[in-house]
Length: 110
Length: 112
Image (cartoon, rainbow over all chains, first blue to last red; front, side):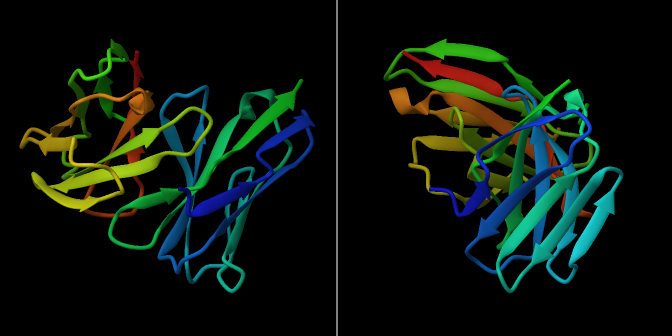
């Protein structure tokens, strides 16, 4: 069973719009990471936010973390058709094991 | 490209058979993890190897086993295959510094 949950499960937007995905978890964490996956291929690491950080930016990506609510969000600004993919949050709570959420399938229409 | 490769890309087996999946980590990465990803779901942690020793295991039965070799390659072995073992199997390697894991493209296993 997944210990992380993401919503929405699917999101469809127009190119140029912003996309926001949310992740919730149940345990204490060391860090939370976001990954992208194209069409059932390997995962690509996007960004990592540590448990003592509240916000982090990388290009068009903005991640927030609220440890009191055990939640994180990923914002993709000015989306492009090439951003179409599945996005997963994953967190470390013990050792190097990653626990993944169920993912958000993002479709960006040109 | 993450520098992590997996073979084969696709594989079809029948129930009861055994399968070996292979992964080649980035040079210098002494930690490798294996994940199972069922269709439409997030990856689930199977186990992790560090310096050729199992270093953590998820909720998978003993018929899932692994090996890690000194040349940064590793194997996932699954015995007595079941239909529910059909999934994408991902390996990920990690170096000594940082928390980022580098994933391979995966092996898609179909059990008939």
